[in-house]
Image (cartoon, rainbow, N blue to C red):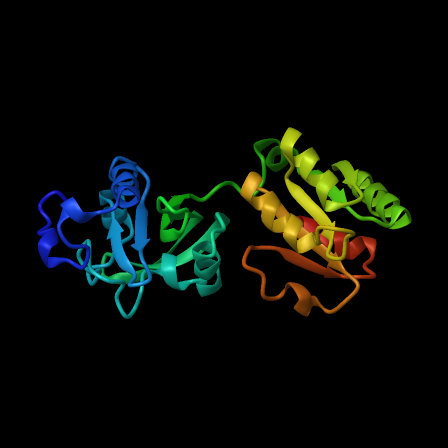
Length: 261
């Protein structure tokens, strides 16, 4: 980066760079985590040494060039997520497997992907910073040791809430319950959970909105949705989740929970 001839790059000479770009580059270049930045709708790409050493392919364009025709997997794996970041959303995708070219062959590695919109002085999104953190553990250490999970159940039907909580407690899990998404977020703010088990249709905030926001607050959280409709409701989510069709029985619920380990 220090030796780059920026006058020949799409960004132009450093003296003309906006403050938001300078600040983001300073953070990125001093971070030990792999980071890459998409700047502007012209998709100018910059990345730090950690990214170049661990993730970048031999065909990656030099800093300051546009995103190549075959973009890095952090940009290409979920175009919808990139558009959401352009719209101003900060996103977290835990344990996302990416296809990477390493040592002359294709390999797969998992990362927690953090997408952060970068804003200019007018509060307009002018870039997207992607941070690739080591993949978080699927479950908490305590849960991994004894198989018991801390589960937050979100269900507005009181009878259904009672039944699922009792089933989960019978499995030995530690269970809390909320009747809507807003109450669940308050509980997530004060306590960590391993699993969010939520109905899709909730009063006010939907289960999908709740799951997306919950993951931003607790990236290690596993999401399980229950729905009385087709599973197609949750088949195109922009975050990882497991879906169960209502009505379900105790064996199905147990199998889903076992699959989270």
